Length: 387
Image 1 (cartoon, helix red, strand yellow):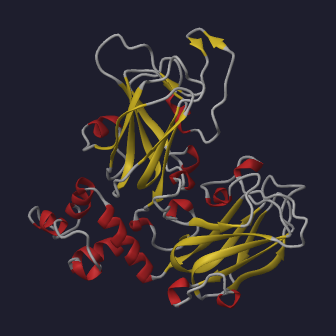
Image 2 (tube, one colour; image 1 turned 45 degrees about the vertical axis):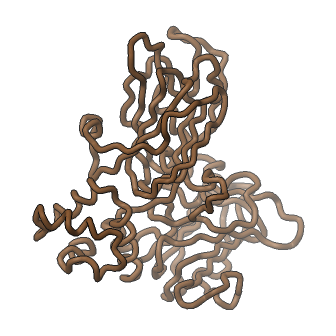
Image 3 (spheres, rainbow, N blue to C red; image 1 turned 135 degrees about the horizontal axis):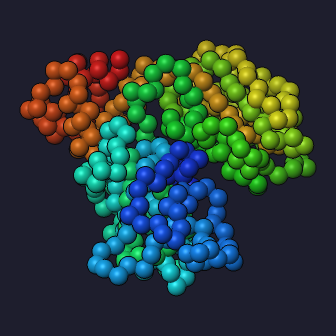
């Protein structure tokens, strides 16, 4: 989902969250509180406890700096993407919060370690800016490139409770071949409409892995009006659905009683997604059991760009999986978007690893970005990226 400039970027997924397999791969100091706390999904909490190093804080806290310089932590995004905004949350840090902070980013191929990241090309997303204590300090980001890592720098030292990196996932299309979860956040799926998110957000059902507790899923309020609740997901691309998983794990007395799944192909000239005639059945209305993974075959081989999950009459779900294959055109579109959004260094690395691309050809090709279509790329590059 692309959030308009006037909207809050915090509606977008937190690409750094531990829920999406983010990791704090390095911090130059974490004497008072561990760096890993930065990306925990839960809101920070206050503690009255003291340990042998001082007061216990739910966040990352460095020692008082007595020499020139500043502290920093590097976060590997669980899902690489375009960063639209960051939140530097200093909840419960008052006299020990950093007075200033900045955020940098880089895009790197593979799985680099801290030493390799130290040599990477970093660009500034948020200039050195004042930071308030015990507050959610939100900063919009205008850079439209795809990044894999972000670096939080604090000046000169102090404590930060949470670091949120909100943006749009841009998956590596080389891993979108075969049967994938077309709805998964990590693959670029997203919730675009939901009837009710009273207890927990609907995007939880598209998260990685199994739910751990009930709050990891989507739960709506109890319905009293005779209708039913629903959530609509934009798939990562136009694809053919093969099987569906509707998971009610940890929902027992409040699981949805029944569910159905329908699809629509917005790429086939459908102008109004609210038109019920445009939708087709993928899974008919089916009885659900509490605390159960329901594995269901798709009842249609028609391509879809969106799916709508209806629950009857209300109730919670842990996860929704929509397994299928992208159409060739959708995979080409994902490849083109990814290649256009890569920063120069990872783009050079990708192209340099393709047979037949010599050192002179790579910069000449990159100078022609953004590519308008796959026809703008050499045939050998297209074959290598889509193999």
